[in-house]
Length: 183
Image (cartoon, rainbow, N blue to C red; front, top):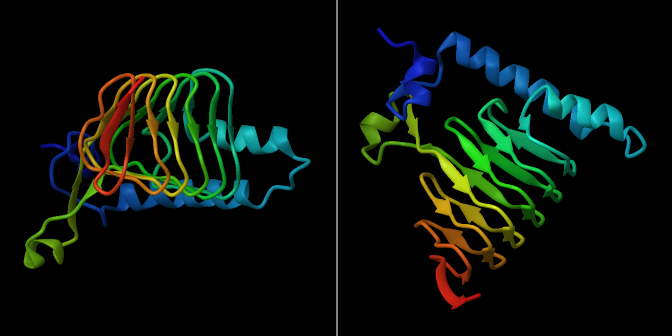
C-alpha cells in the first residue's frame, strides 16, 4: 500500500492532512520563514538555508520573499535566478533548466484540486509535474499551471497564465498564454 507521500509524488489523489506531509511542509515553512528574514548582508546564510530545501545543480539566487510547499521537489539548473515574491507549490516535481530567470511574483503551481465540490472538501488533492527548459525568461506575475512543459529558449510575457505546453524558441504571452513569435 502506498503512503500518502508516494501517492502525492505519483500524481494520484492523496490526503494533504497526512502527518508526515504536514511535518515536511512545516519544515519547509520554517526554513522559508528563516530565509525570508535573513539580512541582505547574510547571503551565505540565505544560500545555505535554501540549499537545505531545494536541489540546485549549480549557481542560483532567489530573492526573498520565497515560498514553497516542500522544497525537495524543486530542482534548478545553473544560473537560476528568482526575483521577489516567487511561489512554487511543489507537491509534484518542478524541474527548471539552466539560465532561467523569473521576474517578480512568478507563481509555479503543481497542485490540483478536484472540480467536484464534495471531493474537494474531502482534503484530497493531486499534482502534475512542471518542466521549464534552458534559457527561459518568465515575466513578472506570470502563472505556470500544473502539468505544463516550457521548452528551451522561451520568453513568457508578464502576466501570462500558462495552461498548455510551450515549444522551444518562442515568445508566448497572454491569458491563456499563446505563442506570438518564433525566435
